[in-house]
Amino acid sequence: MSQKPPFDLSMLGDLGSQMSENMGKMEAKLSKEKIEVQTGGGLVKAVFTANLKMKSLVLDDALIKMDDKEMTEDLIVAAVNSGIDKAQARAQEVTMELLGPLGMMMQDGGFPFGGDK
Image (cartoon, rainbow, N blue to C red):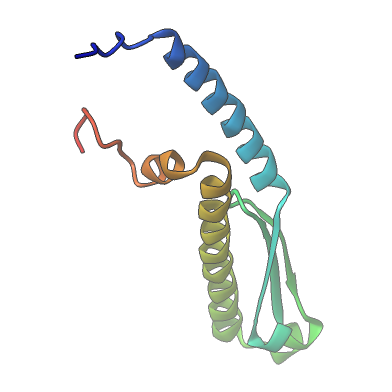
């Protein structure tokens, strides 16, 4: 009967440096990816990065001329929420592309071993 070789701890260092490299790639990719959303038929347009940074918010002149503060606020909130939702979804896709299942565990806040989870 063959005996299993002892666990090679040097593999952890390799895995750690690979993870670190992939995390850097992920952050760079997320910061470059643009998510564009609009509400009110284009009256409000917002651009986000996939790492949840709002880059721009544009209000159409027609919306300003309507002089409807409550509707303007509602459209802005809807655009921001839509942008965040789409950016989070894209971030999850990129995480899976670059980090595989380990990335999903990280996004879910835990690992299948140890810790509080």
